[in-house]
Amino acid sequence: MVSKPNFCIGDSLKIRLAAYNGKPAAGILTIRYKKTMTYKYGCSDSQFHRFGPMQFLMWKAIEDAKNSGLGEFDMGRSDLSNEGLLIFKDHWGATREPLTYTRYPAPRIHRITDSTSLRMAKSFVVLTPTSVLTRAGDILYHHID
Image (cartoon, rainbow, N blue to C red; front, side, top):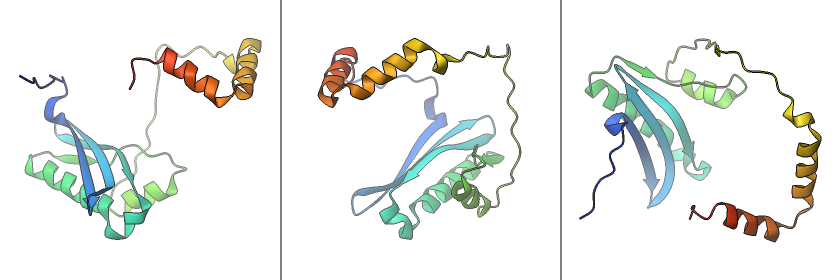
């Protein structure tokens, strides 16, 4: 008997995929919390952009939110330097809002990039043959297939 894993997120997280002739064209991840569905991540294969797979998936996600009685579809965070993503979201009628982060306690400023041991480690990795790095990765991360 195969048991289904019990995730605490349950049905709140959805991954939507679009394919064209059996090939993956795009995918998005949304998460629902209270009365809001939030678009978190998305990706697409540029060879399928002309078919609009991202638009299709977003439309389906918005439909799902509406049919579920949710009150808001949040297009998620965007880096201001990612102009393409901002334009994509603007075309959906999204409203831009600044997002301010505060951390408590404030992080200590630690200049690890200036440490001698880190500079030496970086130099070692750059000079190490790929085959050695691959083998080291296999040994260190043997639990990942």
